[in-house]
Length: 217
Image (cartoon, rainbow, N blue to C red; front, side):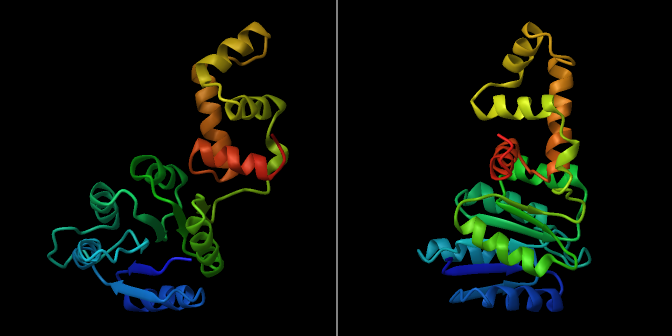
């Protein structure tokens, strides 16, 4: 398990709550920051001292009225990943819009995203454990992991072909040859986005992992 974690949360009550969740995992060194400048300063210092944080857990919203160089969780993630690409990051936020959540995985290569809610404490613990094992974790209030019956046979074949190394242009050609419709690249790309959102997958790789876990491929 991680030896050293930094929690960046704007509100002290939330910070305390996250700290209590992390403490249940018996992580020996837990630091906290209430604003982004403090967080990045602590991260830089930890790496400079050869005692780096293994994980950053951060909110996205911080007090806009305070004068700081870094004013949002997204900026903090961007800077942290640019300077320390191996630092693992979990976002813990009220944000629940799937396209925005997906963009954090795609743009910043984060490791997990947890939408705050009734089950978020339990999900955060699961996320920390999975991230430590180099897995991607996503939990949002709008995830619909139970709706597997809505995947069509063509959806399953699309994901299966991706899992064996084919890309969308190649799959489009294969579908056209086999007279599988619809088969255009544009349609398949849009359908893949829809499948990912329905499955609660942050990336295509995450989707393949989920489908494998569900014995669908």
